[in-house]
Length: 225
Length: 211
Image: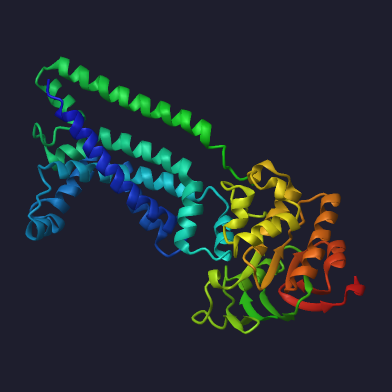
């Protein structure tokens, strides 16, 4: 039995989640409380991958990151990195489909506490960075963590966009969802069952853990307002 | 001394405020939506006036949208209406957050009689206690002016009186300009050296006897 789909999936989803977390959270904090012209257009664009069929996301990514695409071409010329048919393609596909989930959770978390709490910290002489790390981030953390778990689960389960951008190359781009599809395709039901079981176990335990954790923590700091 | 002379367009009227405060308690008295909180926010830097000038002693806080001091450098102690305590920090951490030094934290815990609450979280203490913590926290930065936005509005009579007592004591010890917003006549009378009445953005000076 070849276990590369498991390690590849965890690696892909892990890196994608990290990148999504580090980009979606600051973006959400920046945008969520600001009013500017075109805000709803920016937010719609950010959330768009959530409602698009993964094949459409895959198609667009293929256009952007393909060897002749506007970004793909530059990456090859400048760094010699090819995205199509590589595990990086799987990471990018996972980022694209899971970004909206993290963004939405983060937006909701930052809107969930009284903005005066941050203003109070500012009047006490704290820099914007200090306010972010000591006030905004800890207060939003329960929601951010929920977003993190959803993001990871979504990244782990990505199939359509991954197949279109990264293809199915055993040992390189065969994440678990792809492995399941091609196992069934080739009549290898035993392998398919195993991967299905692993995905079910991962999904179930992460949701179970998250529910347990939020029950324990979400009420802890809640401000009475 | 705090000097304020500002204009700002609000949704239904033009806010026009000009006044000076020495080491005294001045009450900003008026109905909801008359622009009281906006004046405090302009002084603290949470919002900008359209035009005008705000200065504290020799420091210019605001002269124009391009020439103003950032919130962090204004040395303004601000007690918000809902206190806005940091819910994930203990009382001590709340006060220490912007404290000038560790000595002042201890002093304020004692002065406002909240030292026994130091290790409690905001959700574990009563409204009156929260109010005192918010006051201690605002003073811990050794501000040059203290702004209070209806700080006693959610307290019962007895707690209110206790808080008045604390504030009057602080006034004597700290000797800084205090600007307090309220729509409670009794409170204005009990705490104010001077009263500025505000209606639809226009200020009028009233002697406390007129109340």
